[in-house]
Length: 145
Length: 116
Image (cartoon, each protein chain N blue to C red):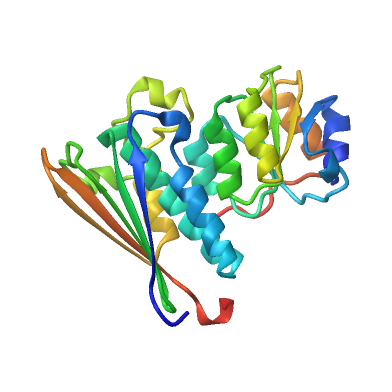
């Protein structure tokens, strides 16, 4: 693709039932663009975990996705409480999710580690009391095009 | 293993995806924690779970799974079945418990595939 494609979504923080809808939509668009299945899956999982995080911890936020010839950039921004200790949050199994979220199958402490696992680059900018922005990049492997 | 054989082995009702019953799946995973499914599953076509909420279907969609089996007599909501149907995922419901369902499928030849 010659130019960068941009997609914007508002993530509703009050509705766990609909969480993940933006990721589903992005997955559909990437399929339409003809990207390879593995790249699409990595983007989908990373964004889905991020979306769930925004709903669980930050009452929602926004998701912006940019697609160019090199890869896919996902920027998830919220105005939630921020992350006090990023190293701790990145540990597999560490979670601050409430019990009602665990009962729904999430909150195993795998969200941020999964997002890192499935992306090539991940950056977390967080300010306590103001919010968190997670920027993730998945490169399109030349062999996969 | 065909999805039809999964339904047969587990005595499961087919709630949607009748047109996929002859599709082949290579492996499965059983979990009630969707975060763990997203973390550890790779190339597995079937999710066996006792958890009932729409995120189960979305997790299966994200992982490119073909079939979700609800165990312990759990029944998905009509909205969940619609969501699965829309995205070409077969939904089965069995009275088997998780351990029994996984055991029957594994013994029947459905492995756990390649884990990360």
